[in-house]
Image (cartoon, rainbow, N blue to C red; front, side):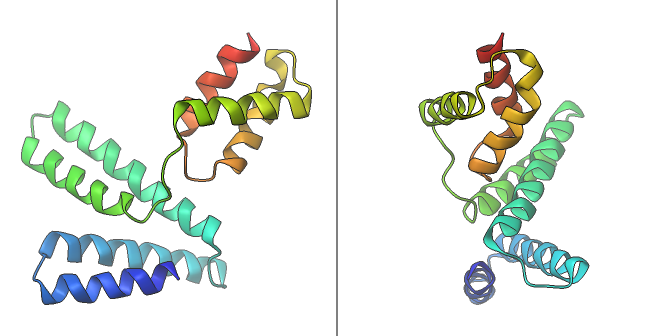
Amino acid sequence: MLMEKIQQDLVVAMKQKEQLKLNTLRLIKTALTNKEIDLGHPLDPALQITVLTTLKKQREDAATQYLQAGRTELALQEQQELAIIQQYLPEPLSMDELKIIIEATIQEQQATSIKAMGQVVKSVIDKTKGRADGKIISAEVKSRLN
């Protein structure tokens, strides 16, 4: 379904001569196709989100590095690509929603100390697949278990 949507949007971008969008959609499609080839089977939605999240993080990192190097035009391009990639990712969770999931997971696992942090973080990441940043999850779990 995601590949079909990307293909449709790719055709629209081609017709409207939106070069940045066209290039970014090609990048997404290639990344998804390469992952399918690597695994030898079609990607389920969770794996598609994982691939898109990886692309998102790459763009964020690149934009940060370009800004630090004073290359604002390249940083802007990365940010524009990031905006396009984010259109295909699920809506991010609010901080309140994330805290509720973390609290529920801590209760489920009966975690009481920092020793259980790894298991709790992994479980929360699985539950929020692509809808919350791992660094934020880790920080919230750590503050809750301290």
